[in-house]
Length: 301
Image (cartoon, rainbow, N blue to C red; front, side):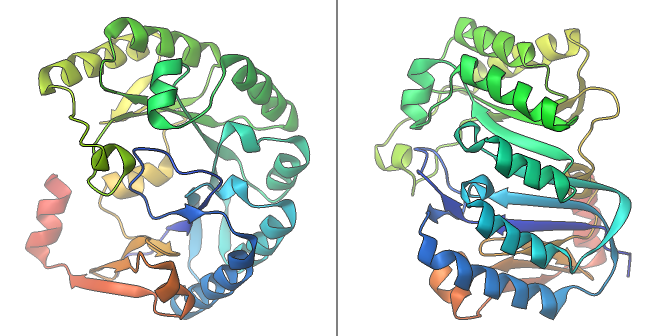
């Protein structure tokens, strides 16, 4: 069995729910945090086999919505992992959660890569997504993070929103680039049936228009020195996400937390998406044994 070098941890809590989001998430409730962290620790104790970890990714949900005291409890759990000296330690966050004390704490605990959910600066797109982001705030917060010491930051960009034009996308790209992120992840809107946009019967844009917007992104970012190293990810040289590449290269990884998935010893598993079940200690909802043919097909994909 190959050595497992990557860990994904899912924190399902959010201060508000975006209109398009199909990830496993619930609105933040302080009363659920402690029971959730206890189960998360139990799941890690049951499954982690002591390997040296080279990438640790804390996603969600919105991990940054936790208070500093809750984050301290979460990071005590991470002490269980044997971390490589050059570990890539990523933490997802939203702009409105970025404040000095919390992020100084994250930096002191070894987080060295941030993934910031900005998505857009266009008012119509933000209204559609039920999100808030302002360029002025983003500039201020990125500057604060640089001063703390963060040198590796990703920003998320969402595109292919209904009625989005090339002009709107170019404006978004221009502002994102002014923030000088080391990495940019781009996502074309997918309409899932159990989201607000799905329930409102919103229709996706035509494939041809979607592709033209994607071409605009690829051309602009290439021109600005970003390497298009994976379908939706662009990075400055040396800042490609090692964690993303674990999935891309079909390597094994641990997934812990409600809704997480993992790939360990030829078994792909999915954790329950029900917080109630997870809090009862019923972690895994399905497992599939991967044959050599399955693995070869995944490798090709």
